Length: 316
Length: 65
Image (cartoon, rainbow over all chains, first blue to last red; front, side, top):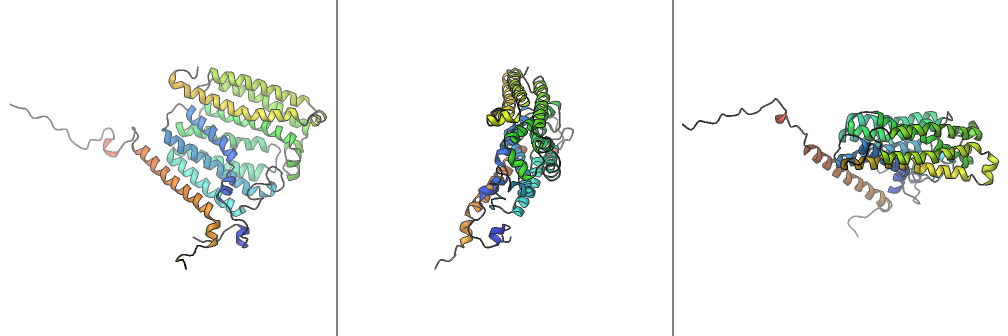
């Protein structure tokens, strides 16, 4: 094994900084990984087939590593955009802490490793599903659609929505209505969540040249899109409640959260830029904050229903 | 003079070397754990316990008189 580093700084003999272990962890987008871990875990626990706790732990870990690998590939490809945006300028590659080639090597290695290990730990279908998810996020979203269409968020949202389906596949070895509904819940939630952010972080995406809906279609159109997706999201969340993974607790959470989400989206739709700028995007910011709780609480409710089932309490 | 001179590079890379060591150790533990769980699982079927396959022929009890 050679001792030559791929890091340009190190290669140039710059002793000032050496990539640390934490820098490589940062490449895996730990915050995004936490959502992946949680939703995959819920998908696995909610499935009607029992999985040994240690195998479940390993499976969720490999799904998380796969998610992290796609994050590293995303950072490798998007390092030019990341260097421009305020929100991402501190990431390991634009800040010079890790070289681009190292990010690519780490992403590819962990992708292969996580898929093979998941197939061995659970089943081949789950391993292939994880491989497809990584391909979808790194190639279809990051390399192809992100810089090409303003619907990038909608398509990219699919990659983030697959983990509960993979968790379900770990237990059952397949797909079902329930796992598709969990997918749709995250998939339809992603656009309003990111578009609300884009409304009050406006300079970032414009400077980077990413065709965000706010840049290509204008802010009024973005507000309409947020309302449309929120209206479509509500029935999906409620229908999930009448399937085998739902129950009274989930339904109560879904009714309250979707009521609040619809109210927020309606307020965003009614506002114009002058009003929004006057109060520093107060409504948009609170809608974004609510959206963070939205998925977390829906999945937490599914988890509670699943955990109560053995005691005869969860479900209908 | 020390027998092994530690290069300055090794000090700079201590954090990532320790981190990688930890990851490899955890991986060994995972493989061991997964193997143990799969082999001791109740539904595991070894070749001589597959239904319909009998390795030994049952012997009829001998009559006393």
